[in-house]
Length: 431
Image (cartoon, rainbow, N blue to C red):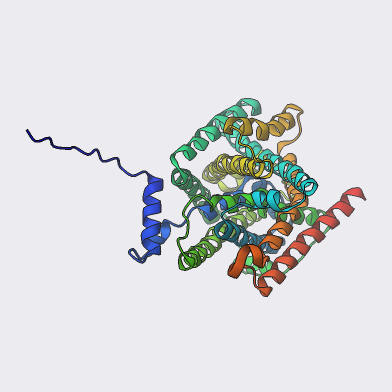
């Protein structure tokens, strides 16, 4: 009697299907826009850090207090972000290691410990902004006190983090969906706001700092846009997606990565500009002192209608939850890279949430805490920026993919701009 062997076919997961598509595209077996979409993901995940609740806080204050005058800062910050996220992605692709791991393996122990401490503080400041902002949205939507709203936000964030167990693709798609929610919400709000597009174009391209408070906000915008934790994260996101089998494939992966960075961060930059434009149109004339996310939400209803307030709240919740997920991922990568040991995600989640609970428990104004956290991030930012420029310019590490002279000059100039802004901020604070 013949036995018939029955083979059970296990369906491929989303992550496995993505890898199959990427390998086929690299081999030339698949072409077209759909095959290129399989490579998208890391820059989209990184881009959510550029649309977090800290951006809401600084952009509302910038638009309400100064109209369109600080739009050029948003553009400059976004261009700096594009350059450094490209460098971070290239570092991960070429070396197969993330920025924190390279620091640990290459630099002296004392310097590594200092960098780790600064990066951990930056990760906590990041999560303060992201987690608190999402909780504000949940609090306003569900009419809950802040502490219960924070517990709800923590539960939702932890649930999203469980997607990582199924590989990289499910979480990337979830983050992409939330980015879409934020973008569509602000697109809808722009249709409800009166906009002087000629003035928008002028101030986007014309630098101006009206007064000292505008300078503080400008530094906050830089800190809210160019994020230190996500410079570490992007290099790590490139490690476990797909490995190049030869130099041609590696060059192709780098090309797709650069395209994704420009598109994803370009969208993030437009959303940030939309935040400033909306705040200018709604608040600049009658409410230039607007400084609170909660007050902005309540004021939008009589000014632009309940639909505008609803879109604002939807974008805020999507931003807070998704950026809190990304912040936890970055915090884990920073700790594992610098120290070399793994911790459970729920422990990391508790560590990064602690400052937010302390701030709320002490009765500190949540929006003020958001703005100050962005200033703290701007002060911590030079550490990963300098490390990225140094590593990606080393021929022994990067080979043919080391930075060109133009890229090095541009990166050094951008780093100098950030450091100068930080020095001005410190001088103003101590004065």
